[in-house]
Image (cartoon, rainbow, N blue to C red; front, side, top):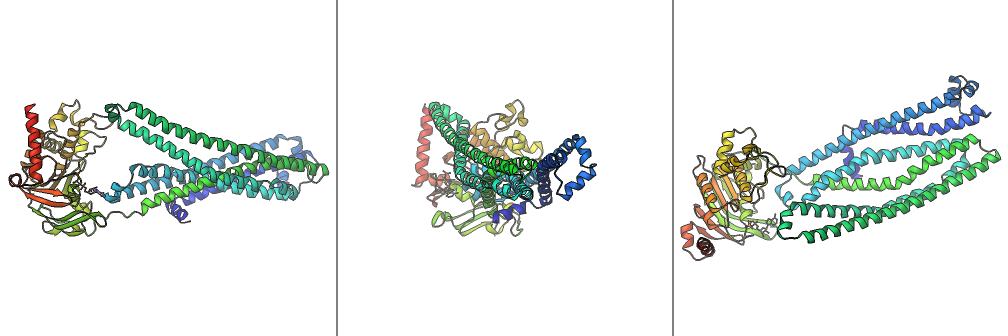
Length: 597
Ligand SMILES: Nc1ncnc2c1ncn2[C@@H]1O[C@H](COP(=O)(O)OP(=O)(O)OP(=O)(O)O)[C@@H](O)[C@H]1O
């Protein structure tokens, strides 16, 4: 019920269109029930001698010129049947277009709301959630709702209208034969309902197997380099074969069960039709009903059996739609991130002070402990330490991707968590470890934050990031497409593009989260030199595992298990016993080995 309310909320603005669609199906079903009535009246009262009992039919006959005239010109009946069929077609068309219009617009609204909401969810949500599942919710769950609105709901409504009309007409024609006609219907309905409820598991199993097979295929295609490099073709073929076989078996089981259902349900339908024909013939023989009525009943029975057989399936599909609605609502209920809490947008120069900062992702498991340091605007601070020691977590606090639990972080003397997130993120440029580039041109990728930025600024940023020459070596230069359809960039080129994209914004604070790891030492040095020589020198945070990258920083912090274990400049740290000196010695001896090779 709660989910249904939610659906009505989404349908706001399209409810009337949907209602008109429902009315259209109602009229078209009424017209369906009229055809057998026309036939039975023709047989009994136009060709035969039976008097017309219904005053409505009598007045229509009078309007058409009377019984005798119609009997001489039976083509009039043919024309009426064609007219009814055309009219029914028009209403069916209206039903389809109106219901689809409402359904398509509603689902578009759901998709937009979902997409918009997902964009506003905090970074933490995206880190934790599975991309595949989110995509499934935005696509197949929304599609299930679309089908429910455009097809299933109108089908159920249509079937119910149809049953009600036909039962009413049948009852007016003959009560005994009506009772015989609906004798098997409850059994057919319950059989269909129970069957489809059970077979739902088969449907789900087959869907899941298909998803597993697609994931295997997708993984294989995306990771084709690893497959080739490790000669895993045989293993991959076997893995895919296993998933494919699983999918085939489950789908085959589903089809077998469905075939059994349709066969048994056909049998029940035949029993039903048989009962009506036998009992109807008996009543006709006894003179209780006319031949026309028997003809009408045989048409009606076929008309009501099909929707009853389908009803079970439609109801289980409707169940699926409500599950999808619930899954979508789960996302929509996730609290969004408020980017402009108190409209506090102070000027940021880049003086930063961390004082006894603690941070934890999970309660009771601090990842950062008692972090204290100071850095002046324009200076460079570097972090070095084992993997998982908390370096990325520390710098993620600056753009407020996460909130610190204890202590204080001040930017130019202002407590960080009082500054609007949108504002601080504009002022903190973050170059990530694994850069993501859009399937756009190189130029568009670099000036992502501001597409109207001048070409000269794009070139300057690219020069600082040491990628300008590489770009010019491509045939189309800055217009070269990146991504699946475009040029393949090396890991280092991608990192340098990401650096250019960040520094072009001239943010007063810039963070390089291990983003110089894929470039060679020389390029690394030239990028850092160019950064230092910039006019608007930013406060720079550098995370690296490479001593040469951090060595020129004004302050180096050595982090281990979330704590600062050493601090100083390169010269002071290499003269002090500790992790820094050990790493320095190891990397130095490796460099010597390389030189001696
Ligand atoms: N989103 C998260 N949720 C829970 N725990 C996390 C999350 N991100 C990181 N961690 C944990 O926090 C700790 C610190 O991770 P962090 O990424 O900050 O380390 P790091 O020093 O940057 O490592 P690396 O050098 O490998 O990038 C690790 O134990 C990690 O498993």
